[in-house]
Image (cartoon, rainbow, N blue to C red; front, side):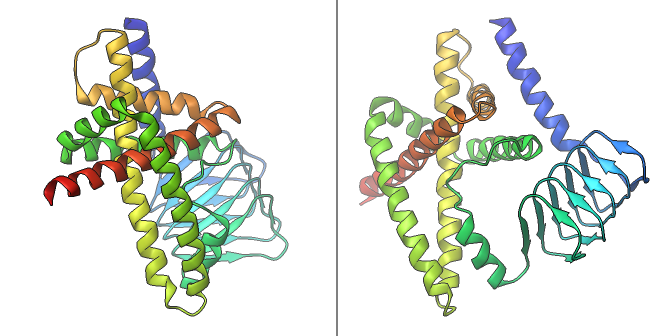
Length: 291
């Protein structure tokens, strides 16, 4: 039991450290290799050599004339991808300014989100209910930490609803799985309709509202799933009844599943179906009781 708890806390601690690490202004000169992920805030990054990992930058400036083998994600930053630069995976720039030389090489996709047209283009190719593609370790760690924090905040704000929803899921899981599957089909249909309407502008507010609604549903639903999984584990090992411990255990299981190729992705799709189902089911029941 102690070994299992130790493993869980080591995993969560690693996620926290990886996400919290922050490099200040730094340079990787030509001929040099930097082997760790670079997570920076309001910094100047000058990469003339090679970064054998991924780069995450919030604010500041990135000047790349060398090579980054992983993903490059920049939020509100000045991004200058110079001639001869190489990016091994995706380049994602949200806000800020991006300058990309014609002869640079990006092996993955390039997303530059700053206008409504960019939003429409991205929503045509990315559906938010699908799990992330494999191989993005840096992205995985960041997203696991992100969902862990959101789950803790949701639990702090809505402790009783999370507990009640987990009990509901325990009693009739197939019911909420079916409801989640139906809801996702409705969401896909609405998403396609709003994307088409966005071509004449009228659908853009509806598209944004739909994405926000889905995100809120998923936040509550995933918190319940983490809580439910953690509760089952705690009961099996006869651990104390602690809601925060449940979320930690559930997040750890989520992280382990996410590390499994192919099968893990299918399991995550299934978990999100249940997350959407229990979230919608709970609020429909509360509304029914309030009437």
